[in-house]
Image (cartoon, rainbow, N blue to C red; front, side):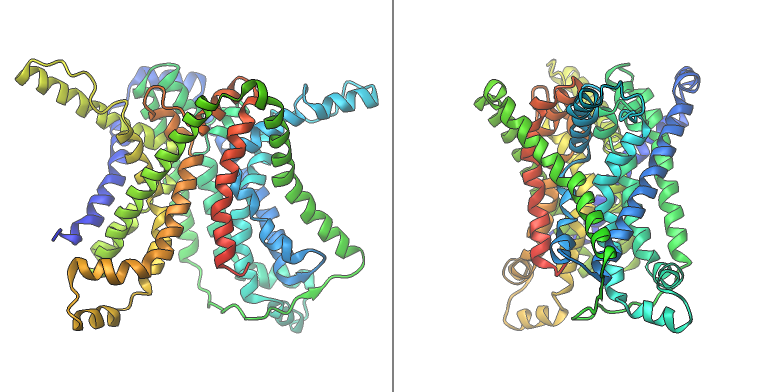
Length: 533
């Protein structure tokens, strides 16, 4: 029987390896590269990334908290529908929303074209959608569900009881929200903002569509335009430092908080809105959902129908779809198997060392895809060179690259990045398997692999299914890892979207985008089935 104890440590080492590879470039800096970066792009990259993260944090906090508060505490027309429908934008990749917004609101788009015709004006007052504010708005619409979901859970646990307590202390309803309710919900809100920060720092597709230079686009350009893997590593090391600073600050912020957990009541007593307040809140919720989900989906369907006849090639699109499904399926299978083994190892050896190893193995989600691509690719290129030299020396055979250009690089990068996604549902399901269940099985003569196969796996099935679904859809939507490490000719739906949007061909990008959205709706549907949102 394998040694379960070592599985979490191997997984943790796998996650730390690309980080170590990236930081090794810092220990041996190339002065000419740094001089070029400082003189040309570094300052602008830092400023662009800072303002982007700050703007998205503010935007998602305002939208997520307000929507969560309205749907959790107040009663207004359509509240039951909106409470779960506001999660639908999670199914749309941010880079898909980005090219839809550009296609609609750019200078040559239908909105500005129609307004110029109606108003007989040059629309000099119309905001530049390609600027920083346009990127912030798109990412806010794409990422606010992270804050909304966690903040709503916090508000549901409080209900209107917190307001009643605040009013008993002499505060108005507005004062009670800011002085009592919001401070009590800070741990949940901080968690949502942390996810938003990581997603913003890791984003590549959205900023590439807007041609807005951040660290992720600079890493890609350094590798594929300047053909300098070392320059890409140098930039990736700075991005890792920024990510870790954000993580440390968030953990320090949370460590000083002490809150008692309040259980969510079975029936939440909500405050009935009346008069103009009713329609203002309803209109606000409808507007957010319209611009974040219904408008992009409607425009994509329109473009897809327009381009279907002239652009659709059955063989080519079946190949895109097959590549996406194959990668997603293999990644989901590999990641779930590793996480099951890791969770089972922690169950058998619940010491602090194993616990820290598991925690380390699940930090890969905080690493941007471009960074992981660099960190995985560099050591495998070195290993490829060593294997080729050995084959030439011992067997006089010129093998060429053995690992480069294979699916192995992609799957390793997916494993590192998405272990965290599958860990929570599988670990939660494992908590249901009490030790008394094991004792009962052993009393019946069931041990070892037989116990795992006949007792544990059936109980873990719901968690495994949820984890596999989440990983499947995340890999389908993942762009930078797929774009930077795929074998030659191995294009997926995400790669097809990038190629078309980089050339401004929005209509041709619509069909693969609609397919991705349909795939993204699967975990949303499963989540709604398993929760009472």
